[in-house]
Image (cartoon, rainbow, N blue to C red):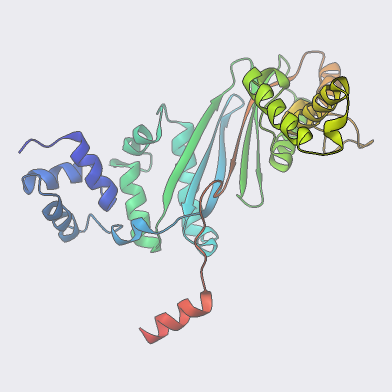
Length: 311
């Protein structure tokens, strides 16, 4: 029976075993999926099988900087916060980040198939499966992003011991200590206030139009506001859109360290630029937050302990 890439992929997802191990297992069992799983289990290569269905929504985000122009951020998930604080897990996450900062992979599949930086005889996925067996929880390398600054430098910040990781790609012809410090401040801003865009220039016309439709519907459903003149209603909509954009656009946000409580990030960057003698701007940023968008399993710890004791 011909072994297809889809079959290998399916077996990898079922067992967590390496790609070549899965291909060998399928060849040995003539493509029988159940027998291939048994083959891997018997050979100790499907250690993560039972754990693969568990929810992994805790974990860490880690940032590694290669040089002034190159950095990578990764998110590696675990099932519990307890494991996220484990030194073995933390060392593994850092190794994954080091892998990412030296990687040319375009997506997660390619990344997971790369030779592991600590042992080239294994893939990244093989290393993950082994770590699952050692730690005893389902672990997942969820995502990574590598940032290479073309006309400036990168700045990074990790918040909350690994809860949030940020990379700022800045454009600047001067890279000195003052500029670096300012960009770290910007990274902290991004961690704290979670902007969606650098500036209003990135916000699509479709998004603005959609938000205006929603705001208009809200106004028309309000007995008092709906009675106001059209010109006033349009002004209300524009005002509310502007307020929303100030919250989601980085340069329009109030700078968290502003002494007057009013200075925007854009004005702060203007000050930094003037002091540096060049234009310092944010080209883009990456912000990872651990467990973002993942469903977290609700545990009854007392019941779990009781169940283990009874078992």
